Image (cartoon, rainbow, N blue to C red; front, side, top):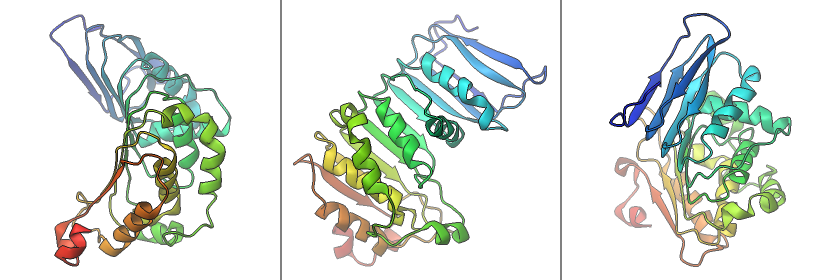
Length: 274
């Protein structure tokens, strides 16, 4: 219980519940502005009682079992439905993915700035659609993609532009469910961890769909500048992604497609300007 009006941010990192299975950590902080639940949490659950002043929340914790915590994530999102900025980690997205498969209803969120920290692969596409459906006022979407090991990337990656993934068909069928979000979305950004992640067809299908259907989209950014030195960035592959997006039909006449990648991987100054 945090009653102080001067305490603005609370971070709980890797919390282990002392009393074993079934314990509950209840958080009541009526004046808190930012709440961050991080790290590996074991032995219990979280519950938010009074957090009406929050303007930013981060759910980037994980627990042992994904299957058993659907009600936990759903309850947290219900208490955070008023928060304008929301960050969700990969564990919570996995839980939501199972909820999507079971057609579990997710309440509408008032979130305007959404950050998803996960790989936008084939399994993650439906849950992204479910979240977009639940954020009708969303203005800014940020995806932090995780880098898969090379062996997994080779087995899952597809050549840029191929149409053997159901992505385009899926997004067209989901359009009627997320049309409200498409009316407000202005900024989309994907931060790529390297290793040619952006060549995955699921990612490209999402970007093309948003580019064509978000009527007020102002900016779409593909950012690979934070790739680790050990992860090779193929600038030509990224440029091919940019070329496809630039030539794709656009719902907003003023949208800008921006490509950022490490200067040391750029073939020439001329290409960098492109």
